[in-house]
Length: 126
Image (cartoon, rainbow, N blue to C red; front, side, top):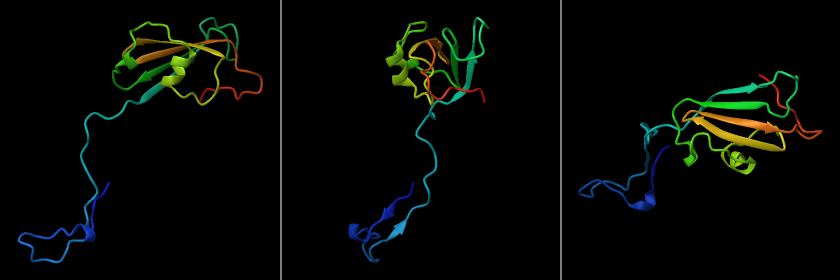
């Protein structure tokens, strides 16, 4: 970010002996406190090992770089599809029904109930 001193602002030195200032600041440095969170890992898992496609009971676990406030939810509270999608924008449809829960302050797991609809772009590893 930069800041411009505008001619229309009539900013001058003190006592006012100079012409009105017209200038641009250097680029802002520093910070406004802690930086935002980052997801550092997304892990797919088929707990049963019974199929090679996205299916019922599969999980997707998100891991964050720092502890979160869990969006106000208590650890191991079951969250429905609407609550999960209010927190996370998934690039593909994983399943018609999602159940999510915070495992701890840095880990969120989504359990899939069903398969993506025919024609939906399927998730892939990598």
